[in-house]
Structures are given as structure tokens and as C-alpha cells.
Amino acid sequence: MTKKMPDYIPHPASYRDPAGFVFRANGLYYRQVNRSYSADYEELLRSGLYQKLTEKGLLVPHTEVDNDLTEHPDRYKILLPEQIPYISYPDEWSPSQLKDAAGLTLQILHIALDHGMILKDASPLNIQFRGGKALFIDTLSFEKYDPALPWVAYRQFCECFLFPLLLHHYLSTGTDRIASAWPEGIPATVTARLLPWKSRLRLGVWLHVLLPASVRKDSLPGGRTLSFNKTKLLHLTGNLGNILTRLKTATAGPSAWNNYYQHTIMSQTYLAVKEQLFREFTGDIGFRSALDLGSNDGYFTKILAEKGVPVIAIDSDWSCIDNLYRYTRQQPGKDILPLRVDIADPTPARGFNNTERSSFTSRTSADLVVALALLHHLTWGRNIPLPEIAAWLSMLTGAWLILEFVPRTDPKALELAGNRRSLLPDYDAAVLEAQFSPYFSIDKQFPIAGTERVLYRMRKNTFV
Image 1 (cartoon, rainbow, N blue to C red):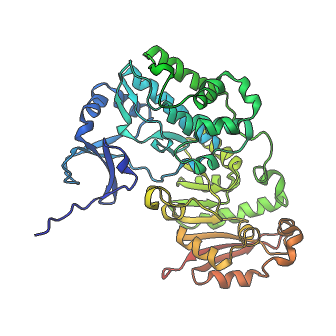
Image 2: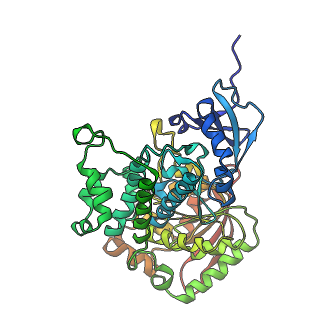
């Protein structure tokens, strides 16, 4: 007789850690602690480290579950962590988000050392953002500290945090593309080649980039081994912290879109009329979550957040997202998650068998999706057909879509098109409505006074 398999689904990225794994059961995410990690887990609790970190809001809290949900022979404990509503990845973060994640990692490391433990890894994937604050989510990343050993995660910290931030500091590249190109961290040898010559005047660059890049990772001259102690470790991590503090994350000047609502839009009158309509459109419908596509620096995202609902705001301009994230840090009551995502090329599924990290589309949904002054950028700027856009938007929203239509005769549309005006798709509001009708029904529509633009509120068709 075939034995019934337990009703749980292991997370496909959780096979890497022998200490345990994350799984889903009954609509919730759990974490199994394996027997091999039992001593370190008990030390985490006995030392007071878990209590300290959770009281300070640095580590996701959990409860121990009595039910044997996995029937796994290596099971020691089953933990039910406080659920994280949305998982984001480092290649979707702005430089300030990555810098805060790095700072949190070092802060937790120092607290762990005070309790006789240490972080055994320094992956940005251990961190998520909630309410404008970085939160450590990997309960099994701690182990007993041995003062005679160096910090095993030092290289990973540099490759995943320090090096991308250094490159951004000197080159203003953003950090998302680096994380995308090197998901396991950018090596010191590559970083050394990319940094400008003036960076070599910095001691920190010599110590953490150029020296490691010139020495083999698996040996020292003469077969020597490095002696280590806690004082040396604190000096090393303290130096890392000082370097991080001095690294700039904000852009030095305006980018293509980060001053959109101050200078780029047609007029402040247009903005005021559009805001009034937007407030009317969102004021008489119920929604528990919202997604702002092409959010710029979050002007309308902040209005959505006034409703007390979680809002995900995405834009392809990292400086816009960085500005919005720095705003959220000062607004603890606003549940806004800014992410650097290119709508025409959203984050793909990644990892082994493309299952370790989910695509942006597959993990993102909201009751209300907002797309203001966006459609013409996708159709004219990226040549994406209207029906394809409509189908994608219907996958993202659970109920509502607020859409701003910009005709091809609009001054800003003509400016965007430049000398390609004759190649623009010839569509008007009637064409838009017809192309969206298989997926949405128009609930409200109003022209934005003083322009040819139209604001639509659409309801998702139930049969889609």
C-alpha cells in the first residue's frame, strides 16, 4: 500500500541550508528546524538573542507548532513565523534599501556576538522590507561563536552588499542591475576592474576590494593560517560599518523621472485636477491592497497609503524608488514598499529550474492597480500591443484598475515620440476601450480638464 505523503510544499530555494527548510501548509509558511541545528537553535533561545532581536523589531518572531506537519525524519521543531505579506529581491531594491539591509546585517551580527553567537551567512535574501524598515527573516542563520575563527560570511557580505554600494557610490549605477547580473554577489576581481582609479585613494577600497582581489581565496603565502579573535572581528566589522555610513545612495541631480511631478508634467493645474479625480475614484470603492505602476517618486502612492492599506510602488528609475523609500523610512504608519521594476521587463523567475525566486508577475497582485500616464510609454516607447498590456494588468489586479489614457496628440506624448511620430500606433480612447473590454468593464471615466487625457476606473471582468 502506498504511504500517504504529507500535505506540505517545501520552498524550492530552501534546499541549500542543512539546518532546516521553509515550507507551505494550510496557506501559511512554516520553517522546519532539523536535528543537526538543534544545539544552535536552543542556544539562540537560551542566550536571550532571539528575545533581544525580536523585541527590537530586527528579527521576524515565530511560535513553535506542536503539529508534525512534515513527518520528516530530521524534524526537531516546526516554527510558524510571523507572515511576510510580500517577498522582494535585491535586484528590485534601491541603493538605500540595500544599504539599510547591509546595516541591519552588521547590527544583528554585533548583537549576536554580545550573546555568544554569530551570523553564519550574510545574504541579502535573509532580509525583507515592511513598513519602510528592513527585517531579518532567517531564524536559522545563527550559530555559536568561536573566537578563534574568522567571520565565515565576510566575503559574502562584501560581494552582496559592500561592492555593489561602492560601485554605486562612485558610478551612480544603482545597485539593482548589479544584483541581477551577479545574484550570488559580484566578485572582488570584477569590482576592482569596474571601480574608477580615484577609489584607490580610499583605504577601505584597498582593504576590502583590491587586497582580496589580488590574493587567492583558498590559501596564504607559505601555507600560513590567519589567527583571529573577537577584537579583530569587531575592528573589521566596525570598519565595514564606517565605510557604509559614508557611501552615498541618493542621486546627485535629477534623473529622467525623479522630478516628474515638480517640473516634467504639463502644469500644476493638471496635477491638481488629476489628484481630485483620483481621490474621487478611490474614495467610493473598497480595496485592501494597491499596486502603483510607474509610480515615479510616489505622489499618488502616498494618496493610496492614506487609506491604511499596503501599497507596492514600482518604477524603472532607481532614483525615484530611492526617494520614495527614504520617505517611507520617515513614515512608520504608511505601509509602502517601493521597488525598482521595469514594467516592460519585470523580474523573471530565477534560480535552479527557475523556481527558487518567483517572477514579479507571479508573486504580485492587489485589489487595486493604478497605471497613470503609463500606457503610452509601453505602447510607443516599448512597442507593446494594447491587448498584451490589458491581459497583463488583468493578471495583477483582483478587482479594480485606474488608468490614465494619453492620446497621441498629447504634447508630452509627442515629445516622447520625437522624430518617430509617424510610427506611433494610431489609437484613440475608443480603440483603448475596445482592446480592454475582454478583461475590464468601464465603471467611471472623466476627462482631465484642460487636457485631452481621460481617467478611467475599470472593474475586472469576473470571467477572465
